[in-house]
Image 1: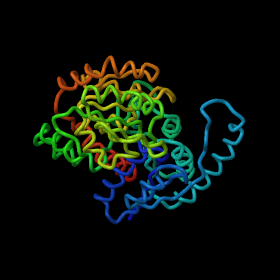
Image 2 (image 1 turned 180 degrees about the vertical axis):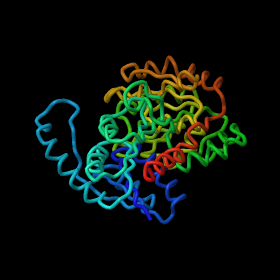
Image 3 (image 1 turned 90 degrees about the horizontal axis):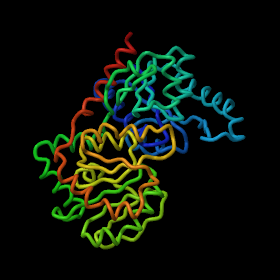
Image 4 (image 1 turned 30 degrees about the vertical axis):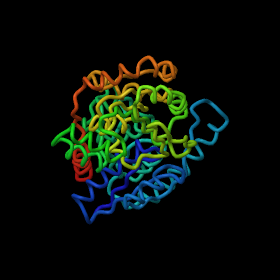
Length: 358
């Protein structure tokens, strides 16, 4: 019986792929122990226990994006997180990391304990934590090809899909148009009316929300339906005139299938789930970070399934001038989704099995 530890927390972009791989590992090795490392303030505190896995907490290493006096604390916070990670990892057989603040101390702790490390990078531009971890292991996997650095030779595995998205793809493949119409009905919208699904990532986006809320007259005038996921921490607008606002969409697979147009950030998980089930998207990449969200959407743009604009260009005027054209482009795109990420979890588990048995 082996113990496998998963590191990847903070946002759904790190947690959902980790959960998908953990489920696949348990399916193949039901007697093994799978546990997660996280922090007390990340989404993992709810998502991991809900998925039936044990979560162990370590102190968060907070790093401000701009220089500040808080940087003085970084070495002390990192040391504390490494010590906590060592206690959790002691006696385990493998660490599988997915990036984020949680992963860096876990990689350093695993290295100090001589525990094999496997790393999956979801974004087209690797994050700093995974770059650090990649120094200590050759067992690397990526969702997108990476042009340079250690990840340029990594296994191209794709991005592991949530079980509901994978199941929805398999069911929709029998008849995509029927599946899209049925999804609209299940969500409470008319199949004959164009539906726009808006979301800003797991936490929502104030910038996107503001533009959408100020464009409601335009949506209503054109007779379009709107499903707007504003994020759990943001104020919920009133629903009216075919506009349905929710804090969070529980039926995400249906939302991807039902939407004629998706307006969202282009995080790695969003792009992967859209690739599987969506039809056409307007991506508004997060303007902070290392530019990975812009790169994540590139292949979808090349495939004619998406358009990407800077956040500063996403305005009420942009909606007024481009909405009908975007829906026309959607109607001309393929009605089918893509199954290229369906085997991602299996590929990462195979790499992990190789690493632990080497």
